[in-house]
Amino acid sequence: DAEKARAELQQLKASSASPSSPAEVVDAQKNDGLEAMLREEIGSMLKEVSTFRTRLSDSSVDSMMKEVEETGIPSRGTEESMQILATSDNRISCLLAEAQLMGQPDDEQNSEVKSHVSGVRQGYAQLLGENAQLRKSINSLFRNALIQAASLEEAHAQEGGNKIAATREAISNTLRRFRPNQQ
View (cartoon, rainbow, N blue to C red):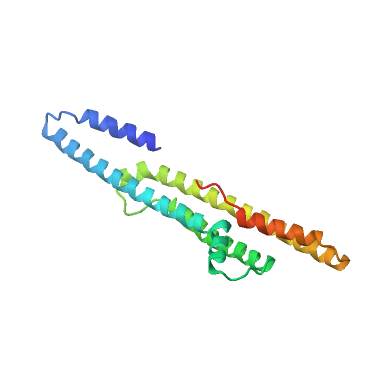
């Protein structure tokens, strides 16, 4: 859709390269105004997407674990990890709602600008929404691993084994080192 808009702009520029009549002059000015509005809207949209991506990155388990570690408060283990995962999921859910709103066309836009930009806006919203859903899925995998490790630890604690404590520590370390690909 962005390529289509650029191609149409190029055609408009080419057709208005040398206006010979007053009507062509008016059309050329209209096209220049449309191009300026498109540039402004796309620039605004890209800032919106960049802000969204930053906020999504800040909602990752990795970022939140770093925040907790920076406080210097000793870790409480599984309980704290589960709280971090829940907080991350809540933030991501809010961002998913924002992504859906981002995909809706702006009613205040010029109809020509809206027709060019709406497809791009919807594409970005869908991409960002899918990214957020993937992060929630990763959180779910970590949550399941923590629950499984805690139940194994409890079972072995009754048997007096230390292997589960080592497994739990390994899972906690994995959570601390987890770094999703920054996109």
